[in-house]
Image 1: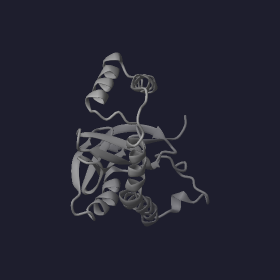
Image 2: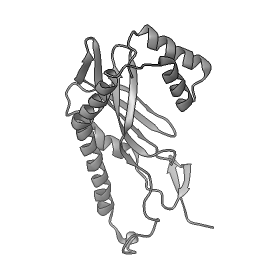
Image 3: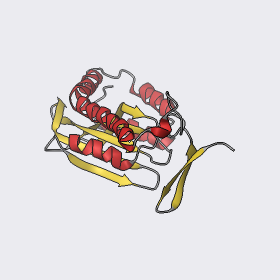
Length: 210
């Protein structure tokens, strides 16, 4: 009985959504992020995928790096995610690529925008039905500009803050490794084999720091 949004593609329904759903399409995200990513001439697309449900993009910046200690180099990257069908927010997260072990670590999200807006057919002035396509496009452009600004900020200030936190951890010795691994196991719900692997690599790496 209530009003709904149905998203379609090539004549097929692909999502049954609330009338408050705000459509943020993958092409809108791409138009906003690719020009600013390309401002860094050494940017590399490490991985990308578009499924029926989501879009993923991981960009690495080889020239934005820092040596935590001799031979242990961290590179900066960004993760960008979006869902056109209501299965996730538009999200931008910083990514740290540790070359010594080829592992990567996603930091907390820098930008997150839920697909939530005003009810369809409603706005502050009750005049949504009269808005021109140009006006709607301008609203989308503002969102893209915010995303681009956050990318630029993450590439500079964001990486510096991440490095400061990691350097702090690298200078703090773990006095009781077994208890530390047990805490990590409980906090992240690791299974027994995973916990054993964490302990093994912690010891084998010869770097018993936080």
